[in-house]
Length: 115
Image (cartoon, rainbow, N blue to C red; front, side, top):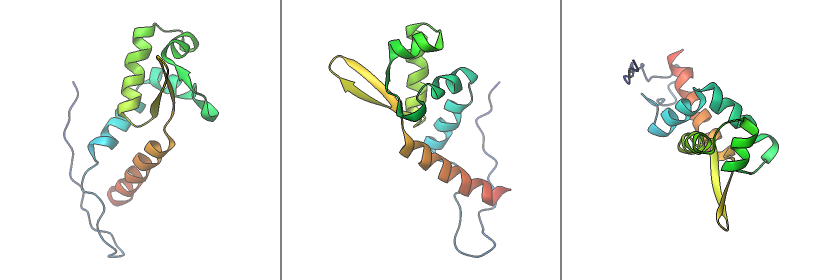
């Protein structure tokens, strides 16, 4: 059973330089969900060094069905891990470095306050 509650941390920094977010944004929640699956983690590694792949290429390289690859890529896209680019009738995916950096930055600020 998945619990979708947050324990709200104290949002005061020791140096008094402002406050960190009291809870993570919806985008960062989606990022964490995208990372939560070992199969999505394996798919993420297919985009190493800027590779661009279609759904069919992801399915073939990951050894999964095309519909499963499509579902996993949709979750990775919502999580800001990959970004699509249309090439004629084909959609190609690549790593979304900006989306990843944004989520990691927010997550780091959050963890520095809570821990």
